Length: 340
Image 1 (cartoon, rainbow, N blue to C red):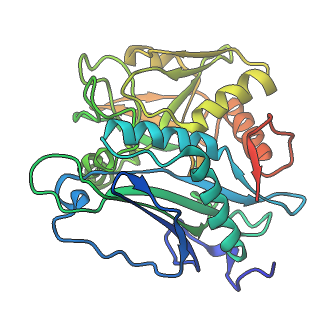
Image 2 (image 1 turned 30 degrees about the horizontal axis):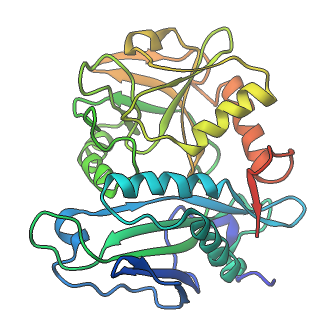
């Protein structure tokens, strides 16, 4: 398929409209078959559940052009499963997981001209989301919902390479125990906006959130999981019921153990032990891994011996291996790569 006339190498990480998107509506207790549409607008009642009580959740994944020219998606079944968990927690109807994956594939297929070519550094970002669409004035779930998927070509999250970032320990809480931190609800991200704007104004790139109950354990940032590398080469990832189960983090754990022969620990991580780690990073769909060079704890700086000037050596191996799998340069575990 002939690609769109886009300057792929200069794309930013920003939205641009593409040709088609998928839309399905839930009404009278059932989902319709869904359609592909060219209409990028949404018309809602002023009293829609999403507008009144933030009843919405979303996912994010990517499509790539592999080294041998195929168009593929990375682990969309895990996005479907995670959205199911989000919907159940928010009293929203679950969009069937198999239909979710088929709809993702349909949207990529319909917009294949927007999938950036291999080697451009760009990818096609895919955004499935759902919201309460019927009128709700009392505090209760909506009765009707809309599920949609759009996509947009995006450039690399970091222009000029992934340079280590500086983050701060945040005084606000991201999620309460037994709250909604483990699901991808829109309200979680709205709650983090004040903190991230404040962090940027004070010269920091991100916030580190600690557990709300004791403020002694590391949780995550506003939109990414942490990974740590010990001085003996063990990969450690924080464990908590209020951390979003990142698909990138779960994939990196497999890469570390099965591809790189590393020891992997998924456990609660005390804040007072991070000073002893050799490397630190944030992981997520957008950047894969963002290296962290420094953590500021109210003026006390924790600097990582590997990763102050560039991505640490172990983190770099993890990044190169996972992106190699995604781009088809390295053989993937069964089921990870879905060809369009």
